[in-house]
Image (cartoon, rainbow, N blue to C red; front, side, top):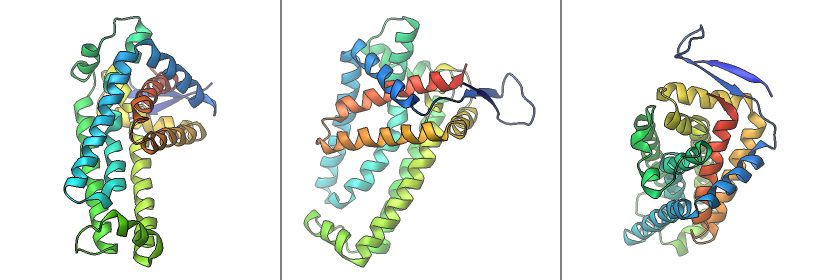
Length: 265
């Protein structure tokens, strides 16, 4: 295992601006998931309550889309909603932190974790909400460019349009490419930065730079980790959002262990 030194905000290392990241094995994400699974069942009431709340919010989003006739935007807005996942999971990161430190865990301590964060966690949350807003605007713009401005078609018409017309295929290809690019940027920015801001007294820029350094030092392991996250979220969505009750806390707890494995305190 090797350590890389990241210098954020200057060319010379200093205690205030330097964070180090370790290189990990390619199969490390499986260890993170294993440790996250153990944490989930150490305090299942807290973890699964968070998962259920996340799933209920997703259900509320779907209901709102149906009420406004925006069913065709389900995939786009659902993907954008997941941009906020790293910030929403702060309480679960705190559960894993408390388990590691052998401190008491409760739903109240998890819910108040963001207010006790040492770093600029609120600023990171604002960045993620802005990214969510940008993605929604881009999705709407792409829809208007490829489908038109006459309104959103019903699902019975949208799926055939998306798969069997030139405009629909163009929207599918371009939308998927843009969405993947934005998701990749968010992943690189947040893969370890949000847990770092919870525990360490650092600024958001340093935390994001550390997250970038973690990905740069571990491209293969991080690619596997991103694929696993996408797979578990897809599985959760495929089970009518019920799977998110388990998938969301599992990924959150595992993310804490990824942070602890990679970032040198």
